Length: 254
Image (cartoon, rainbow, N blue to C red; front, top):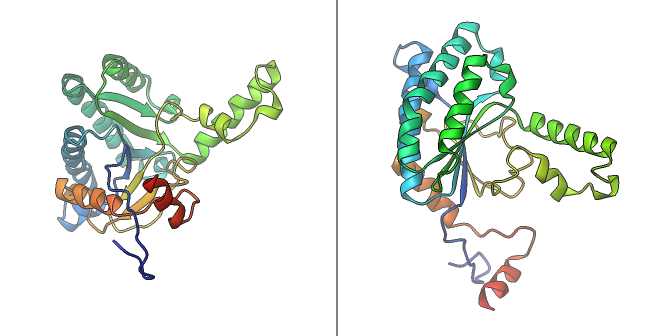
């Protein structure tokens, strides 16, 4: 592969370790079919199952899905209530299957805002799958990137007050350690379905060097073929991380 100047370009060529997805378009999918919006969310859950199966089969290490943002509380109360019920029922019905397939479940976000019964279900599901060694499935629920950074700062400040952290020790690596994704690799590939092209307060810190893929396909119609298309797009890119293309080529040729 060559660039416009004729010089050789070495592309990435490997699968991403961590894929992060904003699953947009459930409501519009339902409205196009003259259905209640909640039916789109049910269809979206079916799409999630297919994508999880695909990522497990392709040995993706981490799949992070933005299920419910901290801003989604602004939606109509009836829709929020139905989403909570769907979240609860999906946890109950899928955790055994995840466990059987060696998938580890992680829920990130401010879980304290959820009903106590849902919090208990989340804790039980995470505990049941904690020792699994296959795909890590991260569900971001009541999550916001700004909230994540703010809670990291709050915990660092608390550590400074107790003397556990020195002010001089504050750097990017320290902040990383206090984010809710501290034990996970940063996303390599970010996907958003539904036609919008923004990150919507998802993993703001973690997406600094992530490759983006946007599609007009609504989430319930996002299938394994579309997932492969996104991965192929990622594999065809040159990831520089601040270096020049020539430096990447030289490094690969050593």
